[in-house]
Image (cartoon, rainbow, N blue to C red):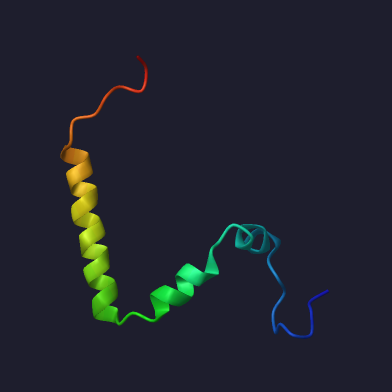
Length: 61
């Protein structure tokens, strides 16, 4: 039965994932403007592209 503080039924899968989420990071991110979020996203994408270009060692030795 749903709690009276929630207007909808809680999803058990979502509740299971919540324990592994650092909500402070979400709150910090929400303090940024949309433009700042895009700038950070573009920076992460550039970094990701550099990682793809970099030579790497095989996982097995």
